[in-house]
Image (cartoon, rainbow, N blue to C red; front, side):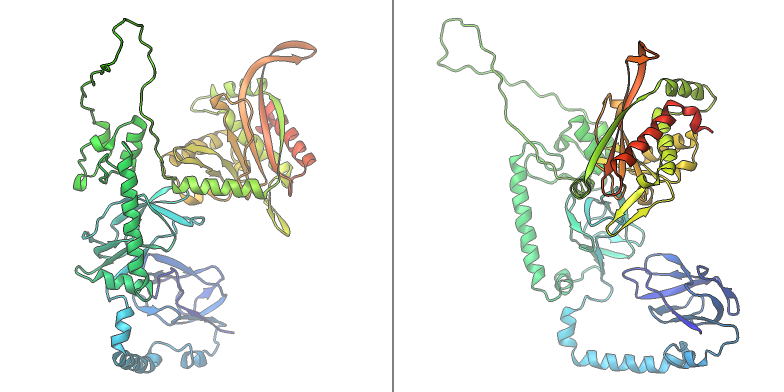
Length: 550
């Protein structure tokens, strides 16, 4: 039976699509999953695949032509099948529907003309585009505007970078899909808002922005009150800012300081007051080079004063501390808030328990030294732990699971999450199919992912899909610690430092190297005995690294 394929809705704002290119022609065989065409939406050109099998019997929209969503795009069916009923009926071609569409349009115009006075007041003017807070990652629920790169009144071209948006995973550039003038900014720098909140309005210069805000609010009553609330909030913020002597984004007199996120971070690290820095960027904006080249001016020391009632007798002065109490309230970043939310959900929803063992690392140290003697080879102890975990998970699939309420999901693949500390908190890049990687491949991949994570260049999909996580604080000298499970994983391994200490070998006390590792488990999926057996296998690999090379 023939299947009618309509123009798909490939984005949340898409109303019409254009066929950029057909990759199949009438008469071709089509398999499920084959790419039928490239569809140009309001945001990008995307491949559109077939969900049906058969022969391509009809193409309803030619290359270069556009049509509304749900228009007849193609028909797939059996070779030689009669599709005249589909073409002449509800799924007809563009030609057969021209007349009805024209009539419908005329009727619609007449209806609008009769009631234009009331409806126009609630419509967004033609050419005006509402830009909302985008969903830049699959887990993003709220975004924070780290920096606006355009200001109200600026001319915007399609593809221009509007702002830097801080998500739960990274700070990303957000580009405009529209051209026009930036008429309104709905979320100020440093403020956060849920996905789909009003971010900005772009349209023709001179547009009545109050009318647009009323129309967007759905009646007009909400917009003014919202503006009043915003004004009140700004006044309150200004009052609080004036109470502070030094902040990262506010001058001592309460005035706003415009600086890039990188400049703010460098200034905070160096203890530089941004209100003393002259900006060389657009409109006086402080950029990285301004902070790096800043030299504080010398300030004359204040002469010490002595009270007039001081005793004449020479008494040894008591040097009591003198100072001024100060504190600063720093707004939590979007990443910090999401980390807190995820950890709380994991800790309070999954019944954690912990198992700790001590591993003899003498053979591991000797093996690592031999491996690193090879040319162009560099392997860390963390790489060895990751490889051992990946191999142990294949032998203990119960640890490589996910709790799913009524079911338990057994992951037959091994994707290792590697906890990496960044300025804003903690991210977990993922090594896909780690059990199939060599030690050198693991080392190179971890170095690449961790470096890009710290520089905020890592992609969201490179931090998704882990089945097990390793957190290593050994390089900081931490002997032993416990971690909170990185859901939806069932377990996480905490790795401590390698220590030299007296140990008993063959009945004698000798100097040995040991390392403590702690496995945190979700008791809903991993029982105590299962976790213990996993650690036994893991220890066997680490104490005999040659078995990982077999």
